[in-house]
Length: 430
Image (tube, rainbow, N blue to C red):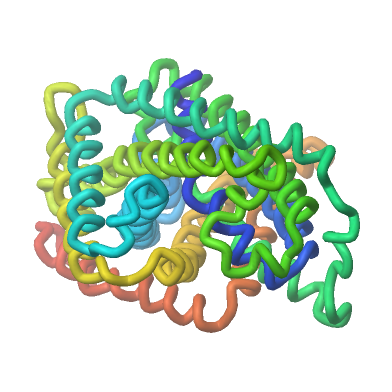
């Protein structure tokens, strides 16, 4: 359970925790309410995934749940959006890893070739580790999660004694926009919770998955929510929002205010370890989803091939090749620009699997509890209903541009689905 929990925490507490405070600075202290609402929504989503993992202990996570309940087409769309959002995000995490290392080697910032080579080198080293042993992946997650949590916990503990209440005022410049401000902040903070379902993806490689995965999912989400809310409360309380806006490393500003200039390298190292652990965990995920879809005939058969240890090596390598191509096309683009683009691109994409997974749990409850007493039935329904409401509310807060990009993202799967179905032996009956 410890490794699975580390996978969940490591995949969530990654690049975004070190960068989002500067992005959220324009929303002021009101963004803290966005963190709170997102944390509550994420906990209900985690409970939904915990319940679904008990029902279906197969590898595939949101894809498996959507396909088994709603059919092949919805399942394929969920696998498609989740997989692409996964490897596109991995490209940004690889760049962020190099960015934080540039604190120690400034040439990485001034020479794009160096940063590109280091990013793809790190990518392929972790791809190789994932292809060889899932156990080693878990060990790396435990190590990197521990190393990055210690500095964050230290900032939380000591930061409470340095909080200036004046930094929280005003909460908002225009109270009429309070609702929309919180909604927009919640949409951005959701990116930090991407990965709460991580333990459900490689279910078949987990010992006693019906018990381990639900516990790891819920506890991992609770730990991440605790860290997010408290750390951002300290960040906004110690450093004024005006100084956070546009800062490349807001936690470095906080650490220097708390401990002095010597703390900067420690935070930079913690951020680098955070990115390394996040990339390690998400590389694991990028092979599992297409493998599950390929087993059902919805992805090319090559993705279903596994090694003697049950690892989908082809899916890992193919996804990493796509990441390498994306890095080669955009290696001169700065971190902040890439990060904002990834947030916009993945928010909508990841919400769809969350939405359909919650709907799947609700539908299963409706089918299984037709003769159950209303009070007990309502309590069971509460978790997926809140998950659905939260997902839809966050989608509306993401903005029209995000919904537009996400819709193109989703509909781009149609030609692939038609091609896969056309190559199957079954024919449509008229």
